[in-house]
Length: 316
Image (cartoon, rainbow, N blue to C red; front, side, top):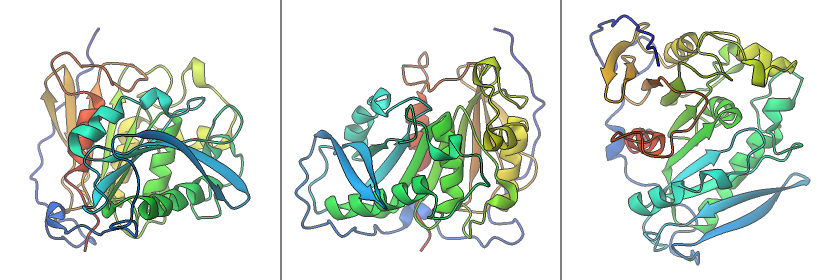
């Protein structure tokens, strides 16, 4: 497959030097914030279950995997994984082994709008990033509920998503900046511009393919995903590098990334950002996919996302 080469731009990495965003201490040293379920949780470790809660007037469903490390006493991280349009979350069950390996609770929230699509994907009104958006309210309530049912570290709650779920993660990074330590959109990323009213800069890792035929690297939608939905058309038009540059600017980072070639014919784009506001992009030559199977001898998308997540916690 032909490779698209991008000039390497060298920048001096001065964490915390960006204007308007104060540097913080090393996020990994942040003590855990025990959730309400610590000490009283009766969840069975090593089990994967499907559950539901009522949010507003709607029943909302999810699947979760409680890792073998969960003892109900020691707070452990929570990873929320949002599925793509028409998915259910079950296709990402490979995260269960990652959960057990690293001691993470993984929850797969399920969309509820026709054919399992998220509201932000089908709604044709102005994007609402408040809790009046049913999907945002669901994720917010789910974090609260899981904190009551399990012993969760509320300083280490993360959200990742694939395709339409990745668009949702971009929105959650604005709407729930006080809850999410870091986010990771895969196979799509949205830069919301003025629609993002986050107070805190949320660390972002995106994983994108240059030959993606659905969400085009150069901007727009491929033939399989063309739609007249206003929000999709609005936020999927600009090139992927421009979207990431917008997120970096919002986080107070330097304007140009350092681009380096890494194993597996991939590239890592790093913006120089304040500590706790990191923005990173992994670029591969593949398409519209979550690399869940072994990437040759190289890390899978799941492994790269967790490596990014475990470096971040909510600031004190």
